[in-house]
Image (cartoon, rainbow, N blue to C red; front, side, top):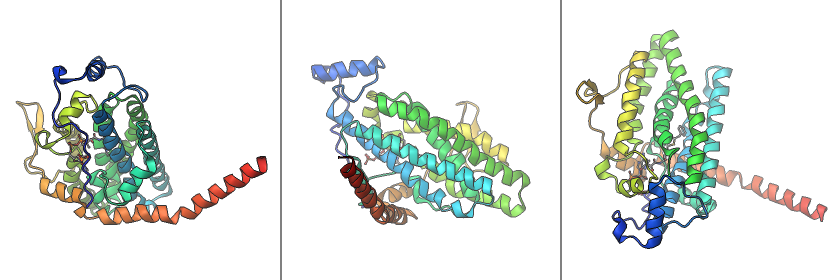
Length: 328
Ligand code: FAQ
């Protein structure tokens, strides 16, 4: 359940000699950094890989609204509530840009969303964890959006034009999300009670490892990476991005006066990067199989939203039909 295996036809990365003339011309365009546009010829595997990645990305944005939606009615002040509502609306917008980019590849939005509701489509593992206290809203913005930015900044240079352009706008908005999340935590750490400071550390303890899992399996366990890098769909590997995230985030963690739940996290003078401990990959794969703390709840909430909104769609369609009849 909840595992989607998409056959993209990319068993191994072809050398130029193995390619058909069309494939070779396509690869040369990629190598020359020319963007691929919807009407251009593309290998079927490239199209399927993009539909897989962009649909998963869109689902992540939409399901990603749920852990934060949980805190809208409990935000501590009106200002915090407005900021959180604005951020959640941005995520909905990101989902819309991404579903639109996916449609330019010939995929059907309703079909892809139906796969999500049937538990057949993946979305980011991080959104299957609960948000238990207000500091989680800070930690989600700072860590989760922070990880999303690291991943998405490089996707601005992805080879498929519509995906690349969607990323430019998304990244601008994610920067605001990350900043507002960090500010929540800074305020709690600088002005909060001991109990509020403990809430911040607790949120970081719970979300630290799941955030590192957002970047996907290690490079040697990542079946899609090699081909996606050759097609420049992905511009940096899962491990490279994870390391960039850690290197950027640890100084911010120190500024907060908090710690990561990783005794092996330490600066390595020789490599110029932080070393970090082993990620629990068994937990990651369990979440991908649908066995995370909130997988079932998340899918049920999405399905209930679609079913509960059926009357609105029917009413809107009936109204539009009436308008057309009157105009005729
Ligand atoms: N969760 O071979 P790879 C956000 C799957 S947006 C679930 O390495 P790939 C904004 C992967 O799909 C967050 N599944 O795969 C926000 C593949 O499955 P498949 C989403 C994962 O595609 C913030 C299999 O494992 N961002 O947070 C995960 O080359 C706050 C093997 O992996 C994007 O989607 C995972 N963490 O690399 C919203 C960015 N990792 O399809 C609300 C675009 C891996 O073969 C609130 N996506 N898998 O059955 C990407 O950059 C890539 O797809 C990766 C995975 C890096 C996620």
